[in-house]
Length: 252
Image 1: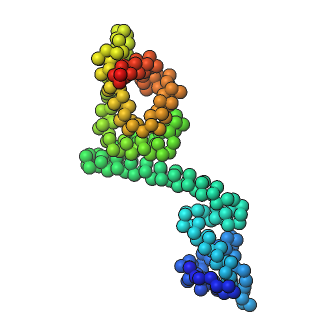
Image 2: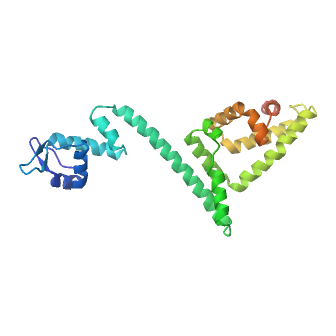
Image 3: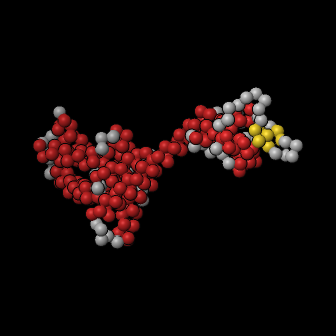
């Protein structure tokens, strides 16, 4: 970037060379009103003065942050505060980062499957991709993009075999708890505490001890308990209450 001196002027070619930009870029900035030259030569060529170069400094600095040209124009023209623009841009970057993390987790999971199942067909991989990427709209209401990325990373870390084993464990454990309730089992007894330990361990596999994930999971279940029980054979409120008492006794 050129050093500015009072009264100095730059033709577009020299300014482009000094800044590393192209003449075409400077022309575009002029056309959209982002950085306009203060003067023209007698033959109509653009002439940039100190204040123009200073504005170009601002534009390039904001561009380095990844701001769009529209956002930069709003800031440099005083139409929006830099704080507001940066807050919005940070939120956008957070979404992009979460999406990248999720994509990386999916690639990691598929890479593991390729290594362990070299004979799998394209259809097999497409089925896996659909199962991992398709997220129920209900889940999206309770987990933000960052949390969904956390879950995708945990799934990739645990592996499909571990996930399948956990699903099988739930299918065995929930009927056991239901049978214990029907038999009038004391939730403080050793067998009930053993079931509570397994229950909490399976939940731990899901949320990994993250308080935010745990809270979102519990909130989702509370709001959708009937649907989860009917459509997914999830635990009933009575079963959850039994496990809560057993877990309290286990922790005492």
